[in-house]
Structure formats: structure tokens, C-alpha cells
Image 1: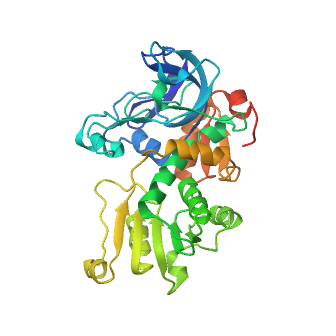
Image 2 (image 1 turned 180 degrees about the vertical axis):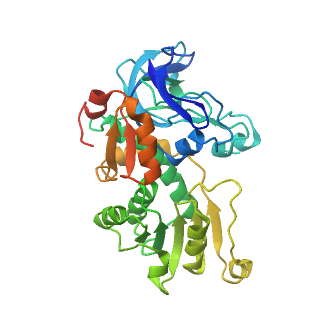
Length: 341
């Protein structure tokens, strides 16, 4: 099969890999669409320590089951259309036993620590597969994984009807979080330097948009979410909170990055700071949200490139082009079977 391969940091190519077979308890999925994420850039640059090389990346994906291994749970059959949770939790460490598998001491993920879905086929555990409705395209199905991260993030920060939220960053995750917050009854202001993305945020119902947090003058918010991972943006989001405010650090910063925050203000204003890591019991709700039409996907699904253009897709992601850039190894399948992207 054809696959995108990162042989070592900085060495990205598209080449041949053996066709996968289903493992016991697993299935093989013909990949219809796979989204590019900031983590993929970190892997390509050698900045994601869990990743081994060579590696086929790709963890945001959906496709069609083509083969089922012995003992596979869930009654999956060839032809079933599925979105795949990439999480590989060990199930027996302290965190897994406490119900916090996303913090697993032996954490792994399809496309991050084992071969993933920037390929024609992927071999995955059947338990990680979620059937998607016929009305959902496979491109929409590949958006389930990022939405499931946003669902977990919203659970971490919480939202009350009428609260004012600041979302810093209007990429895929920021726009998904914006929609979830608005459905929770929050009023959302979105900040991003990319004016095209701000236009999308406005079209999705943002109460206000700004190119810089500094443009918001003396406005104060009940809660803020940083989706960028950039220390200056985190600091600005913190500064924009009113007393009793809450800050969610959602974006992925470099592991050695530092921010400067006032501990006196955390104490005196009772500021709550929380983080959100990946996916936790949120994949099923994300399928339902997209399947029901509760989340608008069309403004987000801006680019679909064939597998052979995976290096170009990475470059587009780096440049900030579009919103969600996806690779479609099976282009006909990604758009077929009902629904619209």
C-alpha cells in the first residue's frame, strides 16, 4: 500500500508499506480521510518524544472496514463506516484504573506511537471504532477526533448560560470549541491574527472577534481558552480574566515553554487554571454531535489533498492556510455515501 512515512525528523516521503492484516481483536480500515494536526508537525520535526521512527503518522481519521480479525468485539463487518479513536491506553496503570486513561503512564496512540492513517489502510483495535451514520461523510468522520478533544476540554473548563468566554486561536480546535460553548449558552469572543478565520468565527456566531487580545481594551471574561500553545497568548488570556475567572490551557506548547503569571492574582482573584489532554470518554458524544448536525463542519473542512501530496499538506499546515487540512487516500470514498462536507 502507499503511505506517508517519516523516516526520521525532517525526512518525509510517500512510499510503499506492506498491506496490513487485522490483529486478533482488530480490524483493517480503508482510510477515507485523515486530518493534519499540530502534533503531526511536531512528529515530523522530531519534537514529540513518544514517537518512534520510521513512522506512518495520522490520528484523525475515518474509513471503511475491509477485514475483521479473530475475536474482534463490537460486531463490525466489512463495509462498516467508522471513525477511529486513536487512544491506546494500557488499562492497568494507576491513571487508567482511576478512569483517567488520557494520562496513562504507558500512553500510546495510533499515528503517534504506532503506524497511523496517512496511508491507504490502517490496522486498528476494533474497540476503537465507532460506526458513523450514512448521512456523515468520511471527511466529517475524520473531524470526530478533534471534536472529541474539544468535548473533553469543555468538560474540564465548564460553561454556564450567559458566561462570557474568550477563545484565543481560530483554527479547527478554536472553532469547534466556539460552537460547543455557544451551544452551552455562553457568549464567545474569538481572537486570531488570521482575518479569514475570524470571518468564519463571526459566521458561526461569535459575539465579537479581534486580531489581538490587546484590541479588547479593558474587557474582562468569565473564562478563557488558549488554543495556540504560545506563551504570550496564554499570558494575554490570563490577563483578560475577571476575578473568579477560569483559564483552560488547551493548546500544545513546547515541553520546555514557560509563562509568567501573577501568583498573587491567582490567590487574590481565585483564578482557576486547568489543562486538557486529548480524548477521554468523549468520542461517542462527538460522533453524535456531528451526526446530528449540531456542529457545522463545512466552514472547517477547507482542503483535501491526495496522499501523494502529504508533504505539501504539512507545508500548508505550517503556513496557516485554510482551517482543517485533510489527506484523502480514498478520495471517492471520502465524499461518498451521503452527506456533504
